[in-house]
Length: 327
Image (tube, rainbow, N blue to C red; front, side, top):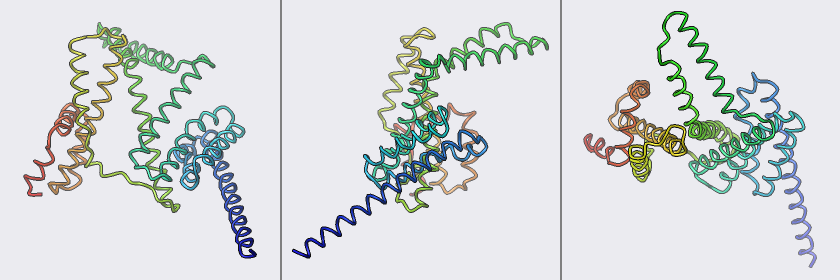
């Protein structure tokens, strides 16, 4: 009876110590999150280096403790950021807190790096859309309209300069209108790609820092082994046929959907083409500077790289490369 009583006391003391340790660590991480947010907002020079490290404290906490306490610490970090840095800090905190929570939860539950990347990119996208909607509704600020006006003002100044040197084309106004319409049409897909690029850069910084601080984190596979699902070829064919048969009017919903889907798929196939080039250089044993030159020429020759990506997605080109070398 006495042994059981002593055992209960020891267990309660241990639980109390664990809870105190969890609360202390949570308070430290919430405060560090708010500090990084404030530094990024108030000191732009330092902010260039700290902006992508803001989610780190919440990721470290989430990697150790369950979702309930992690969510509490995330909310506390957002509130502290607002108290220290005001509305600007709140916007930064709302954008970064979900990323930190997702990274930490993904690491703790053993998710793959691809899963964490996709979830983080989606979080950045959703928070960006919500902030855009809030700015439009509450502050009457339309970022797309302001960007369009800035572009139009820039092209007007350029046109005046070209007119002064007698270099202004007759259809300059038509060209400008078409370019601005293209920017407006492709804005959704560009926003998606920027969101996932932000998530990728953030993960490339946060995960190595977590590893150095003693947290076991997942790793990406080699870029050269990237392989897109074949179903994307069917999507691409459907969209291509729809664009040829339907010929939607510029600015219409159909034109918006087809244009954005086509841009996203071409970017994906471009990346697949680069992965094929990296695989070929590695498989054939050529030095890495060959790959560097290929990447430099890939932008002006993007149509060819996209075609390589399409072929690599649908056919076993890699087997031919390794087979021809006996590998």
